[in-house]
Length: 428
Image (cartoon, rainbow, N blue to C red; front, top):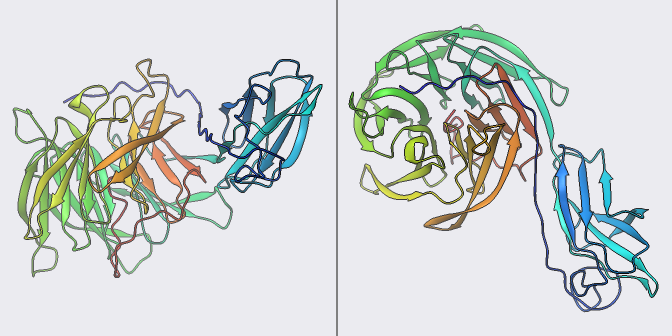
């Protein structure tokens, strides 16, 4: 089985969101309609880009119209304005700091010319976020979030699961407990009853642990043998069925599979329902609001793929389609679905240089397809991902660090099922 060499963490954060398309002809009261300024309507207006950002800091750059002697930067929290002046500069660069995470900001720039102030530039937007880091066990690969907002992390090298709980302070979590599980745990999910499900890649088992009457104490309820080789991802649907992703169907390891374990009439007893073939070297699994199963396949090439299994309506699943466009470089395991149907995938590397990891967001185009939305860099290397009830992204990097992207999604984007069933976090 393939193993990754741990690499030193290089910290980088990049978020690029450029919105263009202003209309109108006169004035600066807005960017839409006949009274708005058309920022891209001639050479007298700058053309603005987001050069880079660092979470809560954004750097604007722009083209310099002929004869411009200065520039005014405007901002708004409404896409169409009105815009308020932030400041002026004589250079084509402007840095804006201390923005509020989770709030979208819109920026335009005007040029000071001999004829007066130019129309607005194109509009660019930026949604700042805050990064928080927490220390967990060794080689954290799996992650799940329960209904109370507790974060559960499977530590592959320690054979443990770490549970963290939120405090009253934003960005501060504390470790509640550490639990011993099987050999080389990779995937983790929490079911509607608060039971912890862990897939142990090292001994090809799935372990169920149940809460006791003592808070923070779990006991092993049952251990189930995996029907495939190297179980990585695990997800739970609204009926309580367990979907286990296996890297290999058998010892030949020619392709991967998803095994469905269904509950029986006897509590604590599950039976193997069906096994479905998917792509080569699948590492991540999630379930969307429609009950479709999404599997990210690392081995489909450096840019990977996502296989969708759709319910037949009469029991069982069939392979619906496979997506490749927009998948990042070396998707090594993390996949989650938010409440709007966007698919979030962690990539072991941001690019072929593998200087840092990234998260790719795919948005639904229609009922049968997705399109590439954007990519965010984050420190470390990409493994597990989960989304909490506020729309924050949680990622583990395989090097004892849990990272929270606070405010990066539009939230609340957690995808609850109807009824009192908590689906865990999909994969990891």
